[in-house]
Length: 315
Image 1 (spheres, one colour):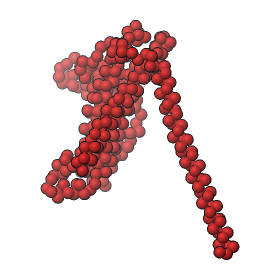
Image 2 (spheres, helix red, strand yellow; image 1 turned 45 degrees about the vertical axis):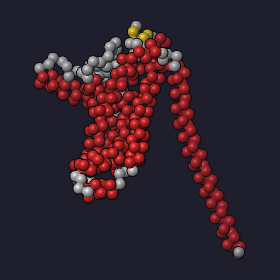
Image 3 (tube, rainbow, N blue to C red; image 1 turned 90 degrees about the vertical axis):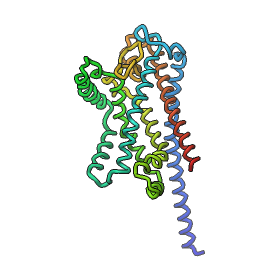
Image 4 (spheres, rainbow, N blue to C red; image 1 turned 90 degrees about the horizontal axis):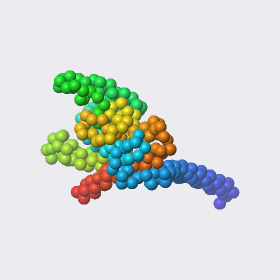
């Protein structure tokens, strides 16, 4: 081997070593960033659990607030949060999945209407949540609700803040998430499955119902899980559409107002006349909200895993 060849080989080895050091540095930085995120979550959760676990008793979970919300429990807020999330999912998933099916299976990708819908979905995802609250107040309550009262000859039933209007407002807030995730789930279904179904004589709707939706259902549930997490924690959209400051009873119908854990936390932290007395209740309420959100997410995740296992068994 000549001196020039040896020199070139050594230079290439040195460059390879420098590239390795660069890759190692990038790996260390990204690992540190991931570790920092985990530590931040651990510190927040640990702080909430440390100050709130003593407050979370059976009475706290099952009683109603009293004495200016400095005593009692938060059961009306727990019930209102669960009812709000369930109604939101019922209203959200069919419309979101339906829009995704139309965009992916029926609409022409180059049509102006399809481009307009996608543009609207993308813009809707960037609208601040407080704007959705104002929209819910103006459209659902002032316009739709009052016109329903006039048409039905009622006094004031639908034209006031209510559980149903708050759930529909949150459904609009989370609609882009469900549309995008459902469309991505439909895109993962192999094209051969569609062609085989159509070749066997099935209509397009039968192909969507019996072939596409069962295979895309786990991905669709991913969007529902994300919407549950966001819907349980949002406060701004329900400020004007249904959440109440204090209600010692449970909502009896979708037209009633309700208490909600996120709004209850906001009230305790900003409107309480005695901060020291409400601080344990505040931490306990935050802990319950986090646990309830985790429980709802866990239920949806287990359902999604079960459907994936069933789909894998069929295949």
